[in-house]
Amino acid sequence: MRKYEINNKTMALYAMNDKTRVYEEDKNFIVDQPANAIMEESCAYFGSSLSGRRKGTENLIGALYKAPVIVEETKDIIFFPTASPKSSTCSWLRSSMVDRYYYQNGRLIVEFLNGDKIALNVSYGVIDNQILRSIRLESVLRSRKQFDDTLHK
Image 1 (spheres, rainbow, N blue to C red):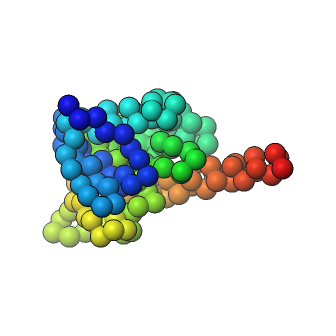
Image 2: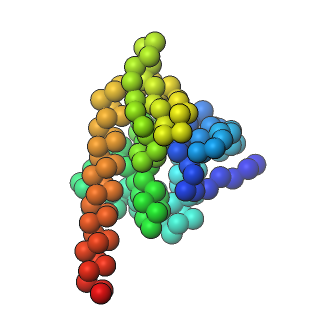
Image 3: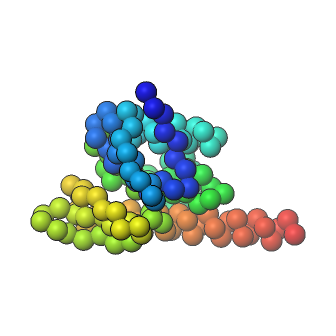
């Protein structure tokens, strides 16, 4: 079984029940792991757990349900879930890689900066809200880093 760790090129983890289509900047491929397992293991690789990262988001911006998570803070790698992370249909998108999103043939299309697209069975409002929450999380993280940098100069 091929294990996958989220990295700087990862744009999305598209849930396919017990498998995941991984979208990177220059390729996409299927991994024999559920998307939530990849998130859990990637958070652990970077020194925390998915629940710990979710608790961190709660502390930073107050988000509890479907909270975006900071997978790796030095590179600002932030992903948000498209559904409850408890669901096998929960995909994870990296907010900074999303270019735009729109409806096409009754499905929401998310287009990434490299032109790749995925179709999701979620509403425009869900994705819009998740992106806004992710941007807020990134902003709070960045301002705390800057504040911390000024303290240590």
